Image (cartoon, rainbow, N blue to C red; front, side, top):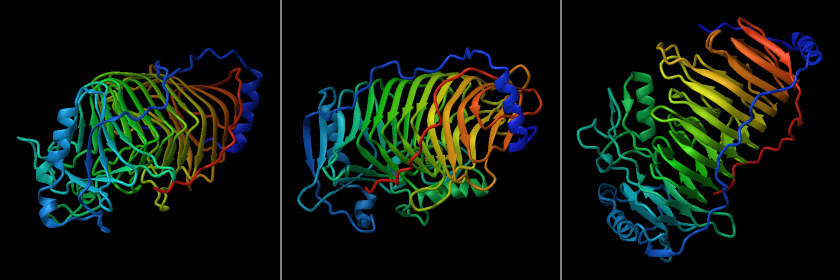
Length: 475
């Protein structure tokens, strides 16, 4: 059970004076992130060019016959099959005023790129039967288990990419999962199924938008909209670059994670705008360890935060999170249902060691849980104990925090304390919940007390960041 201890401004001042008078050298290793040298991707030449024959409908719905049997599946897949291994792109382009493609699930092979031109939208099928996994629960239903749907885009094999072309006005190619629209032959949307599962029990069988499992995958200058479930999963592979990605899904669309590296090594997610109804980024380590990850210069809107977990049982290490902004509401003003900033979450049923995580120059606005490091994310029991250590937050500023805002600094027990260093921290709300934590502070207006909590001064450097919060860009 979590032990709650709230530290107010008066108690904080005394603790800080004591801590700084007892300053000692810091010896916490800082993260370096992705071991690769990552540069902005380039768009390859075309192996095949496919012209649109469909106009984009204002309501994003097509004729019943087209929704039943999406007309572009076969020709796009034929081109992808032909171009695999060439190092070139299958380019989707406008055909005069026709700018839409409507497709069922597609597979992008090794050594090729699926490229969507600026002004063009690739729409995902609304017919659940097109996604059905044989022998699994019915796709498009709530059942006792999941796994009934294949992703809209499956990327298999090394050196593949999904890209959009960016126009001079800044618009990009789009992929629209249409999670907000009624399914073909049904009365509910993908997102309503997810809400039904939450309210009534069970698991929604919804497709993810994109799942990649090959080394050296690139996601570049593309808009990903309205995914029925997670937007992007990069799993059990080495080398992933996401650059210039714009994810736009409402903050109240359940289980629509932005980008999830899972069992991933050497990852960079940068220069992207992410808005969704769950974690903006969730680094997971359920089956394999995740390591050497950089998350830099991104902007988050209405998400559940920049997260690690909840599956950490195989270990997460060397994660560098730098220069990001997090806002608690999405571009329509919808507040996140779990309003977090920087977050590491796990529990005894799926915990493991999370170490050498460094956060620098983070700006938070309208967030409720500012720094949320929680080894008791759920009440689930087990023997896989979470252990978060060598966590450094250097440079964090919070403004306009949500009502009831606080930070959570919870280690699991005296044998698995949270190891945390706080440097150059300026939060507009300093209320804190803490237990079993060893915390070093340097120029921080937040500290903690509670069962098993020790606070000491450390030497440090740097400064509190100056913050600006960009609006979500027009698509």
